[in-house]
Image (cartoon, rainbow, N blue to C red; front, side):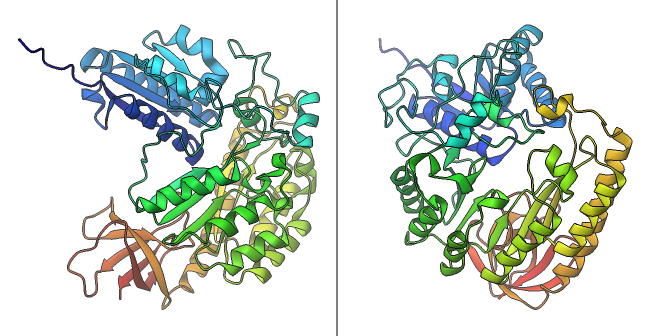
Length: 486
């Protein structure tokens, strides 16, 4: 009598945090699918649940913990037999997670993605990568001098983190690594680098992700070409600092070279990158953005503040005047470019005068998109030990004031869009009402900026998600616009 073949393990994934974390989730899902697992979007039917966590600020950590506890309940009420926690929270709280949440069966750090197979009970060997090591460790690659300096200064220390693996993460996927896209058929992220060498005093990402390391140039090109061959039309390059790309290989203007090469891939409609470090925006980079029609006229430069006193305590440097000159240079080189930035309100030592400098800068710079984080006191960051902490109530008030200021600036800017004809990537029905569809222009990065709401399909009876349409902007609101299909 023939035996019924065993059903493949069903594995459910929850990915939290930034696009870089999402790429990690897609790699782990790809590895699992390659090993024979079946991925499911239903946690109730999953045999194994994986939560890929974020540990950037307190609110992200709390969301991660809440999600872990929510998924843990499915071990009682559903089919789940295993709960795996992955990502940044593991690097910071490896032992505490297992001690305080006994439902967790395994943990996978940011540098251990391939160990997801053993954690899930799938011991099939991972496919070979560019190196012969168990993980895709870039052995023999020269590090950036800045990274070596920071390491000698203790920048990447994890000695005070209970349970942290002493060795910094070194894993970096390549074009041969299986990957299962979670972003639909038309858009995809490509992680071109991992880690960070900058000394920013508010940030623990270097401790969580390791030293800066770039992917091989041709590996990125090969992955992009394969994605476009599969129907992807928008690629967003991500990394903690994409503008340092290639410096560890000795490349000058490595990001500009990479963009110039990728923009030549036939069938790629939009190409963009996140994020730019302000002093790394070179003339060559701007020239490449301006030259290629399919490189989105969009630049995300997280400036963090504008007061020189606060920036110095942040270990960032510069000032409002320097930033304004950079913005002027960018807008002159790439007319019509959309600029996005983010700031931290209430950093230790931020006075009312410092905040007013920041507010004045926002008024003068007139960013297209702006995000504001309230300062989060992260144990392990250098800012944690700074004095002159700003009261939480003041932090929230300053955050609200900045966002209110930006709301008015955005409303004025968006009103100038009315009457323009723009190419829009339609993403699907609006979550608010099926009567509206929504999409993005080249001036909108995925998920983080405003939306284009479509209330008139023009000559089409129905729209197709993932396609580009020519649209006329008919209305403007604070952050969003309304359009009709032409």
